[in-house]
Image (cartoon, rainbow, N blue to C red; front, side, top):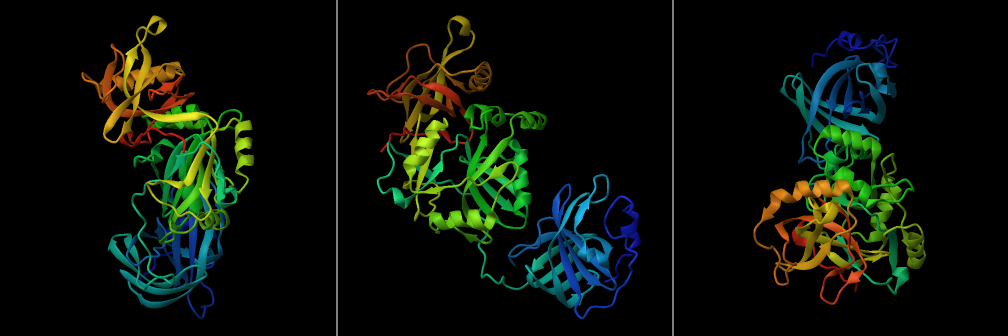
Amino acid sequence: MATKKLSDYDKKRDFKKTPEPSGKKRASKKAKQPRFVIHEHHARSLHWDLRLERDGVLVSWAVPKGIPPDPKKNHLAVHVEDHPLDYIDFAGDIPQGNYGAGTVKIWDRGTYETEKFRDDEVIVVFHGERLQGKYVLFQTKGNQWMIHRMDPPAGGEREPLPDKLTPMLARLSASLPRNDKDFGYEIKWDGIRALAYIDGGRLRLVNRNGREATRQYPELREIGRAVGTLQVILDGEVVAFDENGRPSFERLQSRMHLASDSAIRRRMQDIPAAYLIFDVLFLEGHSTMELPYTERRKLLDEQLELEGPHWRTPAYHQGNGKGLLDASRDQGLEGIIAKRLDSTYQPGSRSGAWLKIKNVQRQEVVVGGWMPGEGRRENSIGSLVVGYYDGDRLVYAGNVGSGFKEADLTLLKKLLEPLRRKDSPFDGRQPKKGAKFIDPKLVAEVEFLQWTRAGTLRAPAFKGLRDDIDPRTVVREVPA
């Protein structure tokens, strides 16, 4: 390959302002085997730089999603300017305002064997600390290349990263499990359940109804950078904390329904979101869902160690469920989740292997209409008419007339009006005369005292709308 001159490298950099090697060392004693380095470059966009020692310089490619571990998947590689040989040991921070500003780390290094090195195709075998194997780089157009693994990965055949999984759910329980020592206990976080798909340092956040939520919480994208080249699917909860450090579903409301990127950025400063991680479903080409809960937690705690400014992995406790439940009640938290230590992960299942024990009664409900307001609410919403599904039937569960803030009423009025319909969506028992009906496409969360004998909610209070739940999946939850 005809390498570029280092003048291309030099003219892009002011060496009085950047700590990068100046490139004055044009050559060095030839090594027995040519060397390579892969830099992890946390610039404006995370990427990896592959550099091969060749003819006195480092021939270089920027690889946005990292070196592909699987022969079934190619990655883009952008051919960039040659770098000086002493760049092979460089790691550090390139100051803002300079070309390539950001943090540069050495991801891997070692030697390589050359099978082919042409202007449009390179075949090499890597012998690195992390990277082992035979790869081809081939030109597609101009500086656009692809990198492909040619031999099978050392860990055996890899599974493709699943595109879509449905979170496992917990059954409501009136009490703690009797066999306390067989369960692990976690805090029940008051937020939005979401799976985090991470590939090539990029995060895709998907909520319970399969809708992507990455755009709503841009501060969480940094999780992808923290994970780096690992392919992983995490399960967790997006939360917002109040001034006392408690998770607050009401505060999260103001992040859930924003339409513009500018509004999201403003709210992000006032009410930052956090991602609390409690499970791992896929890791490095293999599903982990058949592993017992304790093994999945071990992967989280000991291998992934995910702790950052907007994400963390809260601890779980083996046994002593009563102690954690009492502590959650004292701290004003919603409750706890009990998970069998030997349980596998069952996507989409509401299994008895996972139980939720609550300090307060909560229920998701489908909004089927509203009652017009009276008095000071004459031109607004008096109460929401709500229900739940029993098979294909939407069953009336009463009216929710308290707990609203002015912002809630404004948002509800905006969302309800376009969904208006003439007939009732409820099957069987009906709300009282005067109700305005809508297509049942909205889900709300309410807090209440108890279910009445007639099957309606007693003293329900509005906590907020949910955009992460398919209305057709909302059922009445009765403690076992």
